[in-house]
Amino acid sequence: AMLWFSGFMLLIAMILLNMLLAIVLENYMKVKQKISDPALAPSLSRQIRELYRRRMQLKKRQRLRLNDIYRAFLVRHAGREKEMLASTEPLSASGLLSIVPNLKITQAERTLKNSKDEHDKEVGKPFELEDLITKSSDQDDG
Image 1 (spheres, one colour):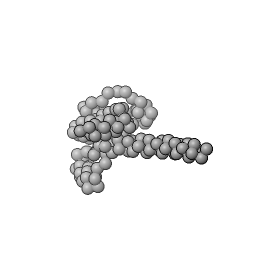
Image 2 (image 1 turned 180 degrees about the vertical axis):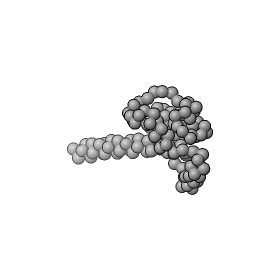
Image 3 (image 1 turned 135 degrees about the vertical axis):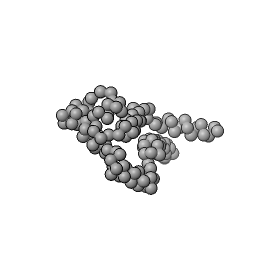
Image 4 (image 1 turned 90 degrees about the vertical axis):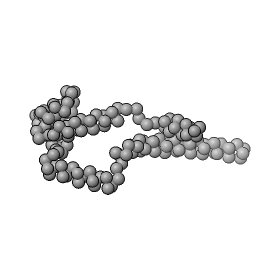
């Protein structure tokens, strides 16, 4: 009886450890997906350079803050934020220039491109545990 009990306890412990490992790996995959793009996890020096560049452009009136662009859209929708966010009106760089005063064409194009890229990341296929298993087995074969 002691042998059966010990075997049962060992089996249950193995199953529970396997479940714990699966949970840890799943969360690891979620975090890895978020930082897999180097632009999402830039170095401190890169962040400082970017902040300095943006600050200089702002002082020279070569760029607007995203808050200013957001405020222009809010004004266009008479302060109704829910209506603004639910809008399906397509935007172009020239349309953005007509909505947001003092916006430069380069910033309008960059802003639209970046927002499309972020949208594509959100609706794209998420990075799953099976992707890791497939990639690791491919590396083992190679």
